Image 1 (cartoon, rainbow, N blue to C red):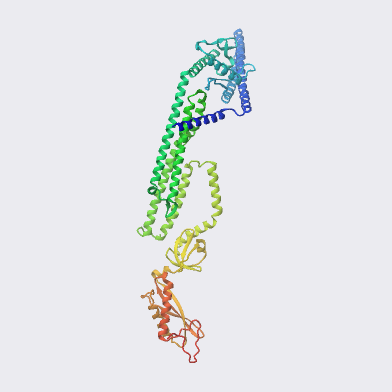
Image 2: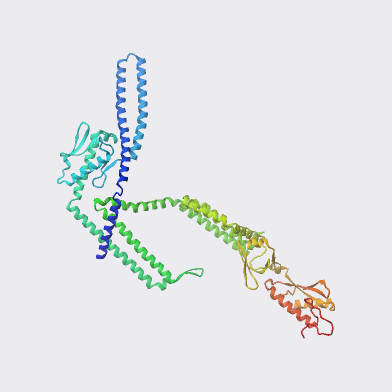
Length: 604
């Protein structure tokens, strides 16, 4: 507790010195320049007031003289009419001039509130006019100094502070000391009588001096000291409790780290280890402790400064630093609530609309919901397109309701992102458009065996940007959709499901072998091959008659497009076996045996 009290006292002294430096004028020249401008504004308003008062007196004299003339010439009706018209014109002109002059005076009063008389910190009243060469700022400082002398004296009697009227002013006096003089110009500034204004000033001075003397009494000082000690003890207790609570929470986290901290992963991707997770939470715990201590100390400062009259203005400043931002935030939140409710409603509508569309797309993809002319494989890409357009539409609708959407920074960032998107997305947009065309052209779907240019394999992924193909060697090849659109595509799987995919291979046999026997051997080899359809008869085509051999093409049906390579291998094995068993020599490629008694090129 002693340590906390010492720290608290040092912090209070340090903060008080900083605030005192902040409150002390650092540049007297700037203050003097500001006072000179203020004095000029007040002098301008004072001149207008004097001019206004003199004009009223002059107009009243002219009007009185005209009325006297009217009384003298009561018999001359025509002359009397002329004088009445003159009086009316003077009244109208005066009213217009007075209105303009009063408007100008009110504007000057608002822009130049005068110099406050604040001998004890609080402003008692303001002085806006001068007396001779005595400027308003000098008058205010002199009056404040005399009021402080009254409070410094002993046995102040409020009833002895009197208003003494004279020809040109009403003096507020205490014995032989003239505290201040209230002139007709002062009264004219506030549109009151001189005696009334002087009485108000005198009452305010009596009240302020009496309160100040009570404040400086021994009992008041003892009360302040007691309050300071109570606040310091309270803050020390708060510091102790806050440190104890957060130390307990830290110990709890350390003792249960294996239970609560297991790292952080997103879709099996480890982002944080358990040790890193623990360090982050401990750092947040310590940061929250320091923030709590800071706010406790900061909120105690206005209470401490509010005890002493000399520092109450500092307390008000500290409260404003907290209250004004907090009030602005709360007012901003309150004013934003209608827009927030609108955003929430729009977000809910968008969310459940997307859920409904997702449900419908799943039903179409499963075949539960059938729409004529709409293929099931269109369901997912169509849902992705509609979802993107729907989110874009709702974002455009919600954007004006977002806080700060009209700020220049927000607009600048939006413009910057738009420029980046327009400059760097030409190829991406081309791929997206190609992806849309491919989706609804349906040249292939996921799982089909295709040949794209020089690439042959199975389609494993199809997005709006790229198509991924896995070859029979397990090579994953990514092809941009714009490239897919610019090349021909062979789909082996489409016809294999219904018609059957025709596999074909060629052999060359010499002219000495009857073609009927060659056809029989090739068809037998196809029928014995695993993967060849049994219900569709293979057939042979004689594609050419060459110099030394005949070219035969075997055609057989299969429903397993993904097993094309294996089926071809088995078919070639069976062709070799059948021809060897029949003693027929295969002349491929361009093989010609010399018939000089040598053995044919066939295995035993």
